[in-house]
Length: 206
Image (spheres, rainbow, N blue to C red):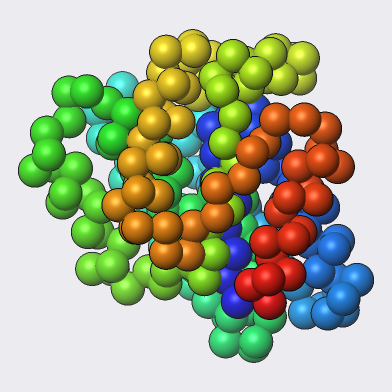
């Protein structure tokens, strides 16, 4: 089973991924669960992660294709082998992140280009998740959480308006999928409160 957690920066994805991995490991066994993330969670992937999240890239589509390259290696080395072994994979970000952050949140991107970009994962044979857990929180709350964490990466410095567009892009993707495989989770409140909402939905899925 392939489970992906999505949401804007500050929505609590990393914390919830950890909690979900521990929750499922306690029920299925530690060796049955793989907890991973994008970009960069493969041997050598740190270089692409630093480039993707740093501010040194200037080409308009450089980050998009860098994320796609990272994903190709991540799938080949980590996700697909684990799925073939029958393990549960919990991934912090996947294709919906790339569409939300680099494509649909950019008002200058035409519908034609957005359509082309949205078809690429399927054309490249990238597997679809069995479940996409979208942690939804308003941009103001997310910004306060990021500020409390301290040091920020390139995306985390983009400002509230940008994250409102990214949040809207996530909801648009969920609506386009007609809710299929997507779970909308209210990410306000404490980590334990949010995880209670997630665990109920995941247990239903299992």
